[in-house]
Image (cartoon, rainbow, N blue to C red; front, side, top):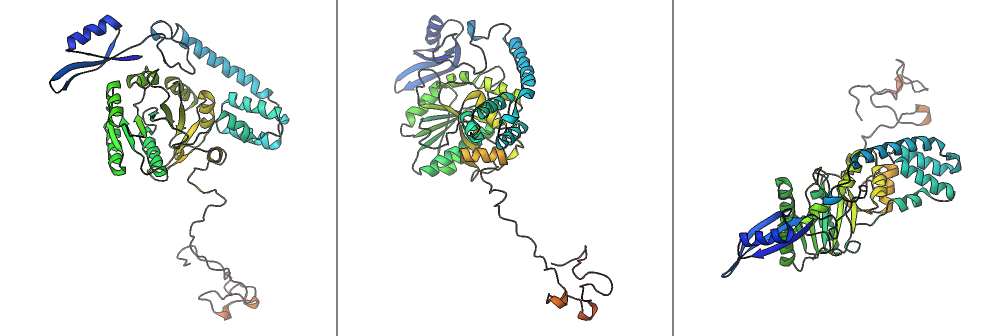
Length: 417
């Protein structure tokens, strides 16, 4: 979609100009009366889709657009059949994998990844790389498939940071956490939070509330003209973070970015798009989301709700499918200590040990303060402590009372520590 803004003395004159230049397919995105002193004019933002519009994003797994921007006839059926063919090919190829070519350590790691839900295609790629180099580490091979670029000011220098993802993925919370992480990195940093999802009241209230508490600037924008006005009003803002609404089933992320003027030649290199996803979705749903949220340019993956997941194979599958680096890992309900910049070590602990970034390793985790237990009494002949409430005359040398009950046996009910 190409966005243009027209101005004129009134709405009729602007509309006539739009129809003359763009034709009847143009869509009016915004229309408003403007006044500055005694001067008044009308401003209208319109959008039109072209088959070869500059900067139009193509789906990573979809076809090139046909006439009118639609997919070729029969594409969905062909895509479904090709998916079935891939499943049959993998089913035939998987038993033929010669696992004996791998070292025991490599074989165990590859079998574990398969149980974690890593796709057969990714598993076969790993097998091929490991078999070609017996001394290769599984982590080295995974690092080529799952790139990492941790969240920081230096790693992501783009002024506009856009957060996209399905409804309920945790975009708003993740964006707030990442904004606070930048503020901790540099206390004097001016950050503007832009709510582009103006139709949802909860996200608006959450963003506005935390912006007031944290000293961040809160704004709202639903058109390219409104977003451009925010840029003009905040020339000293180092980061402008945009919370996009979820994309409908028949929509695309490229269209949403175009509505705000964040795609194409006008956006330049100052925009980074972060795809926010939880690892709970199944393979079919994740593939559909990746097709819907495909975009061009700089971007990353932000994984949320990690504490609610039971397997983490999706971290490998999605990175292999879209090629985006992982920038942040988000977990837990709170705003503090619930997000970390992604790193190789944090990803591998999460994948192989199911250890969240904020958790201590199981073998070194501090043990909970247990209820004190009495020491097991030893026979009196060995100098052990005498059990409380038992007379010395009632104990035999073997530590058993004359009534047949061992002195170290505690009643099941009413025992005191």
